[in-house]
Structures are given as structure tokens and as C-alpha cells.
Image (tube, rainbow, N blue to C red; front, top):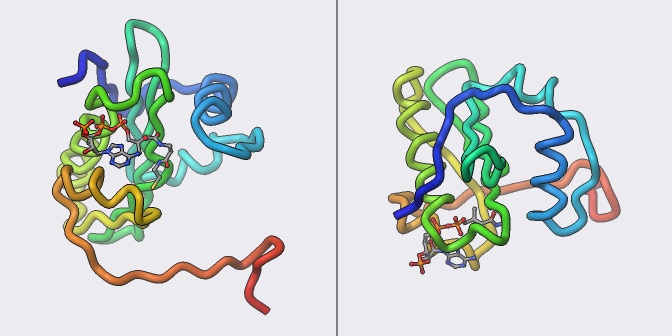
Amino acid sequence: MTNARIVERPTLTDDALNTLFSSSWDRHERRPFGAVLAHSLTYLAAYDHEKLVGFVNVAWDGGVHAFLLDPTVLPSHRRRGVGTALVKAAARAASLRGAEWLHVDYVPDLEPFYASVGFETSRAGILRLRGDEAAE
Ligand SMILES: CC(C)(COP(=O)(O)OP(=O)(O)OC[C@H]1O[C@@H](n2cnc3c(N)ncnc32)[C@H](O)[C@@H]1OP(=O)(O)O)[C@@H](O)C(=O)NCCC(=O)NCCS
């Protein structure tokens, strides 16, 4: 069980999010988050005291489908239930905001994580539109 405090829609600066992401994701490139979060159904952050240690964004289609994006926990705070608490809180928040389905895609290694939070597997696809491996 985590001691992290989960907060829905806190004020988050680009600096705080880029610091979290650059410590948590390989090859993170600094980016502005404001325009993305402005379109979110909701987003949540995890704090250890005042330190930002986790984040998850919930995008949506304007209807009943919500999409879990960028679940992130600082490496120093992993395997303590922070990710689980964030995703469960995101699911509750999305449901309260009218979503009926919560989608996520992930690499196979993370199946135990998503299964432990209650996700069932379903076939899904993803198409890279830009970058070296982009589809023609
Ligand atoms: C994925 C991530 C958010 C998980 O956060 P976390 O706080 O460590 O997750 P939890 O502590 O709640 O894990 C709960 C359970 O999920 C499973 N789990 C968590 N991380 C796992 C991993 N990397 N591989 C396999 N199983 C994992 C375990 O069963 C774990 O329970 P245990 O610690 O008792 O074995 C975190 O590893 C992360 O930020 N990774 C880098 C970014 C990323 O890849 N995000 C997901 C994008 S789809």
C-alpha cells in the first residue's frame, strides 16, 4: 500500500512534469504539457510530501471512451503501489466524469501491472505516423 497522496487536476508546471518524465522515461524530450492537459478528461498526480513522484493523463473521445496515457512513477518510488493507486484513481475519476470504458496500450512486460489493476486484454493496434519507422 502506498503512502503517496493522489491529487486530481493539481496545478502542474512544465518544469515539474519534464523533471518527472526525464527521470522516468528513456529518451524523454522536454515538451510543453499545457496544451495536452487542456484537452484531458482529467489527469492525476502522486506526491510524496510535496515532491511529484507520479502522473497519469486520461484523454477521451468526448463520449464514453477514455484513454490512459503516460502512467509514470519515479524510479525511486516504483513497486510501492503508487502506479496502482494512480491508475485506480484515474479509473474512478473517469467513471465519475461519464466514461464507460478505459483503454490502455502497453508493452508486453507490463501486462502483470495492468492485469493487477483489473484490465482485461483485448487486441489493439497502434500505427506510427511520424519518425524513422513511420508508415508510408
Ligand atoms: C509502469 C509503472 C507506472 C508502474 O508503477 P509502480 O508504482 O511501480 O507500480 P505498482 O507498485 O503499483 O505495481 C503493482 C504491481 O504491478 C506489477 N508491476 C509493476 N511494475 C511492473 C513491471 N515493470 N513489470 C512487471 N510487473 C510490474 C507487479 O505485479 C506489482 O506488484 P509487486 O510490486 O507486488 O510485484 C512504472 O513502472 C513506470 O513509471 N514505468 C515507466 C513508464 C512506463 O512504462 N509507463 C507505462 C506506460 S504504458
